[in-house]
Image 1 (cartoon, rainbow, N blue to C red):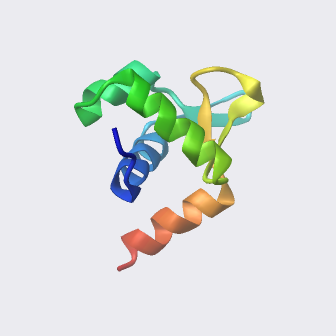
Image 2: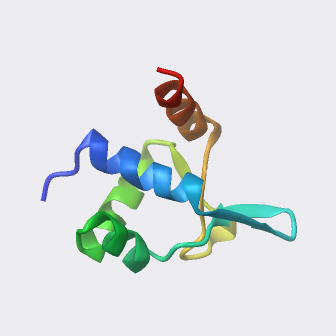
Amino acid sequence: MKITNRNKLEVMNLIHNNRRTTLNETYCSLSQQEMAEYLCCNRNKVSRIICRLIDEGYIIPRNGKVRRYALTTKGKGVLMNLNTK
């Protein structure tokens, strides 16, 4: 399964649109399985996309916890640039 830029943007949008804040921490509230169901793909692909986004500096795991991801400044910038076009 090839990971495309569109796949990465879809996951970044899910993380951005499903964020919540608790105890001064903002993160995505969706599990990888929930993301996979929303995107109509399997959890393994979502996991690979998330790993790639972390490696490329677009998202970070919050406090090292599984299932808690947040956009970095770089990731927010990409989404903001796309939304202003």
